[in-house]
Image (cartoon, rainbow, N blue to C red; front, side, top):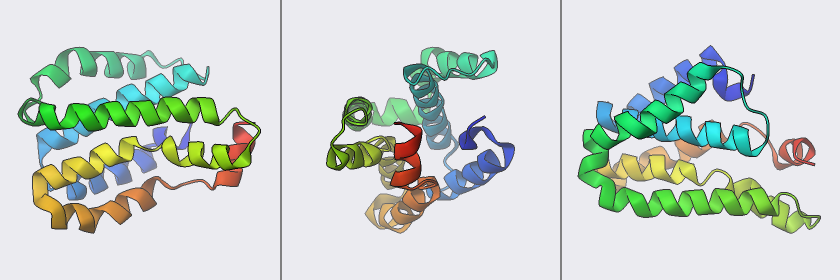
Length: 157
């Protein structure tokens, strides 16, 4: 079980998301739906799928039924589509670059894999404006920076 699936990690993450997104339940739900899908997609891509069908159900039900009804997504979808697409594209680049022998490109892959964080930061902007986003942005990055490049590089060798 990866770090993101431990109950302690999830509790802390949920408390921080509440702060980052100013308690906006629809924004929090949107980010969670997107995260569930992204984590499952990454597990499948890495061939380390979890046998827990609850995670699969959460991701698919969220994207198929919850996301299209989410008020935050409906209100901001024109703005969100662009950053969502760029985030997915960066992650797909990361998946290719991490397999190369060039360390410089693997370092870029290490950072690109977390572009989905920018969606959370953008959501902080949408709920609280630029100053709020800037106040939350470093904390969001620090929370998700739970491994060094060297640790990640060994794991992905």
